[in-house]
Length: 246
Length: 253
Image 1 (tube, helix red, strand yellow):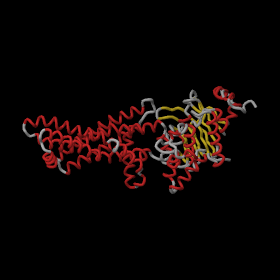
Image 2 (spheres, chains in turn brown, red):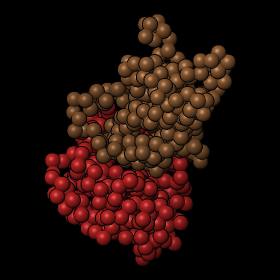
Image 3 (cartoon, one colour):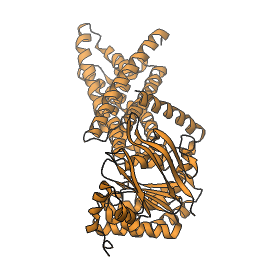
């Protein structure tokens, strides 16, 4: 725990230094991490988003149909996806795919003494390895979230069409129930989740023990830690929003 | 007389809560090839980790290049030393050339062309000019170590630390690596601190050796390898070097 706090402190300080001296930032490594987490993760994120929309629509339509208001499924899906489920489900996928990959990558480097090599070359691993991955994860989350949300809405629209609700009505309800603040808040939340996943994944890798199962344990810790951190942060944000009335 | 570039005074070596070696004192002189010697687990790599600033000493004083190794001086010291790790520790997502160029990119104001030229020159010096475009996964263990030496040389260090350079290498490759170390020392006057327990290599390259013993929890001998072999009264040292008598061609001449 103490080690993680020290690492967090160093990450914050080096992150702030990077804002002042952006030339120190490893843009190439960041772009590579963005590509791996983003483009490679796009199909699975879109698929899960689509299925989520379908499931939400089916489950809620069954109940709402009893009251003859199945058209409000569109409102439910839009609010649910933009505020909560879009960023949440995308973050869980990112934690599983990229958080574990960051931990495994950095963990293997630690076992192979590459982290020691960086340190003795005077290149802090936080600047060299952690910050590019964290920035990439934070940047990729809003993009993936948009795809997951759009796919979810399309899934919901397909279900409602089966139930004889025209697509134009569905999209009209989506637009009327959403607000710019809601969408931006969801995407900002996604970026925060990305930052957390990046930090926890990289920190797990940095703490890898030099044992046979060291890298595996680090990858598991990254996924579990990432999902727990997302859930806790989301809960805190929900409480904060309730208190602030937003 | 050559100046000491590394000085240890009553150093306790180990990790927080675990002292591996106690009261270690010796110095390494400029231009010397100094070997840290001993059986597995005796603490020779731990001593080296202290010297390169990866772990703080538990007690005593450690000075490198005239500066005490502490948090404040560490960055200044690191700019003036080079390290080759046992595995080579090359970055797997970079080519050999990019690995050698990395310290040049970070710490010099050389333009890209000049960096490439210098990195290629360094690879040439270690006999790997043809491997510049290869990834570390595509080259052998001995080649990885030579690329790591080229990377360690990039910033013209005053001291190079080598952790088990012969480990995992066949005798011919190992001997070629020893020749390379001698060649670099002759050309640049670089000081080398080498961790090894490979006796043929020690007799070929070492000016002096510090020998450690796990059971006695400290340094037990400090001299040239031939003096250690021929004049010691210590049973452990005798036993250690008796294996060498079969390996060293000069022995018994």
